[in-house]
Length: 317
Image (tube, rainbow, N blue to C red):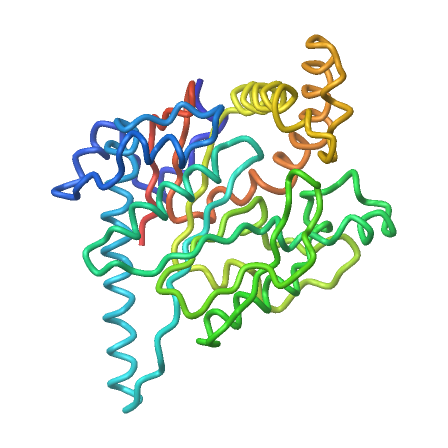
């Protein structure tokens, strides 16, 4: 089943999977089946064929974009008469909960790291920039985690501004899905990487959080290339419920898990609970906040059954 609305034909060039796959050129496949098993989520059926047909052409395109950006920087340096310093190229991956953003990010990171010049690639998730649970509870919005108002957007923008300003050492907070909260401590330390992949629900959003003034800058202002993972609402719900049921048998059974009580549910009750969470929280967020950002992306990967990418849309320059 295709996504509900195809992107505007005036904005994007559409590719079938077969026509996109031919754009791989001579790009080598640098991940093995064993590598892929470590990179994909347990409930996603991403094959080496998928990597070859979809992600290798994307890797090639990104390589060309990064090279072109480096050339533009050299032109600017020549004009200014002095080098401005190297800053990382930022790739953003957006899309719904359960759409496969994390797997896409990990696969791209693995492919990019094997480019001939061996760039240093870091992966950051915007989950780390959620307000801690205590803050969300104080504001009465713990049940809206993932919605725009649940993020510390100012902190996220400061992080990206420092990254793009060439600050030698930048720190990103880390989120634990196991504990359902932002971890305390130093977090992830980035020391002037060549490329940063940032994935999350909110990376393309521009609407301010409820009650806040519209910011002067947006997260997307610091992004060089953006990708949106698209799928129909029915598929997304099915993937979300499937993941919930798998976690019920695994991670939720850990006594330290925030969701340990879900492990006690019967199979029927667990499936009903997962569907209820999807429809009351994730689907609302998708329709109100995430989905409307799709056509702000440079590239859209449209998925069908079993996370298989069926169509690709590349925004016209």
